[in-house]
Image (cartoon, rainbow, N blue to C red; front, side, top):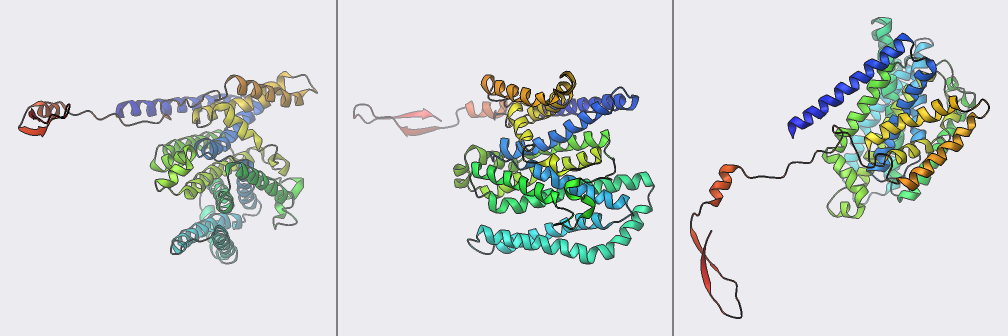
Length: 440
């Protein structure tokens, strides 16, 4: 079994590297133009978003329409960090996002230990404490850490070559955007995950609408004039490259695979299978839901940062509630609970919708592609309701069950040899009592 697992892992890594090298060569030589480059990068971003939704819905059973809200938070959070850096070497975004998130995480851990000492702490009380901790953490970062760590950050980064500095800032921006999406999902999930699945879906849809409205007013209601509100954010550095896209997607796939094969992953799946039974065996169902929701949202936030630095422009209309149905459609088409189906369908979805149909339809009829793909979805639901891949996974991603126990040959021979005679009562027949000696 171990050798088979190693072979499947080696095959997966070799195949992934071959794909990486082939696409890199095609992009370098100009065989793939900017249009197809954008299709590939967009496909990778939507696949990461959808993998997060598959973890939440496909594996944990929580119907969610909020992925595009966290996608937007990651995109704008990462873009603000790099925008500030490229416009005057302003490290404030970098310091606030990274150290603010770290402070918030530390306060969350302390609060969790503190609240465990009380019985029956209400959901709204928990939410109030965690929200207050978040506000305090980012207030400290803005008021105290930026003046102290800002000059130090600039000095350290400018000591490196310009190309390396750019990569470090970009990496920090992606991590910060993903962390912001995770914090937002944690705060949102505390009160909302108490709801049933259908109500939870409606609440997440409302969250997406709220995020879109806030993005429309970032330069008025929120103190971010550089985002320009409903006019759209410009001036974002176009730092996304194929290595960043490929290895980000590969990391998401591997992390999700290893998570699902761990004890935490089995806990997540058990909540989907039977929430009541999971509670009866001692599983903290609320914690399992929140954990899956946060990790899935972090994946969406990472994808948002990748996408923002590919387009070099962000507009709130790109994250409206209609767009939030795209990950759900991809998950259902690929198959709930299938990582392989999500990856293949994610790329296929963008390739069909924004590539083939956009080019194949006559000029002026491009919008008809939004009529064609619902027909494809309808046929899929009628002919194959479990999705294209159902529960299928490639060997590396497939769940490895332990082999059944087989006694060793020496143990079997020893057990077969008679060692003593033990008298045991015989089974009674017709009221007659008798006893026999049998070999143990």
